[in-house]
Image (cartoon, rainbow, N blue to C red; front, side):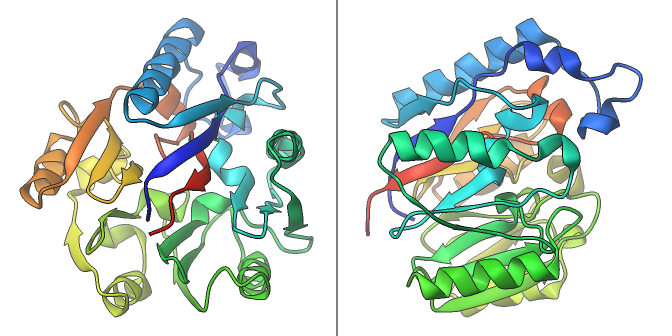
Length: 280
């Protein structure tokens, strides 16, 4: 987990207005966000990223209201990008928009998850440069996870792959498990099976648990900007317990409020797709 240098984001716009007020679940949202507030929150997130030394690249094209949760569409390895295969019809095609921007930045697309498998990259967490944890969730199935594991091995990205089951109400792995520092990880045990903690401890992490209320408020969906520094959701309001927990281990926590955007069931990590990190 080297220092983050470049991320892709998508600034939300009028596509949020396509979300039904009466049936937001059809677009995978809990509730339709207020557009003006959502855009303001997003701009504050970008400002926070820039203040931490991260170059932010906006993908201006949009496919649907979920494009703001850009992390799910791809993962970038040293060899190039691997694209997701979305199971939900409303998200299909997002990966192509992201692929176009990555190619413009000089990042080749080396492969993609193919049907019948489905995988979204919110269900992938690099534990070490050569070790990865994959989640089996409502969005990512066994066939997709096996493809991702095989591709990562083929491109020399990892040597060790762990798999854990992601339990509702978590949508993705990165809502239930995350890394904060070189030797510190956190999870909410009610949202993953025991394999997650076993994998973390096998890779040398001390594992701490966050309270259920913070988990439900997306506390764990922070973005690790560098070891020991994270950008998290509402660390001085709803998620102050998790902020204080991390700070007790010496982690520097930067907080942003994304209450409107969180109605799409995603947090800070979901809204950022790393393109370049420094090598350790």
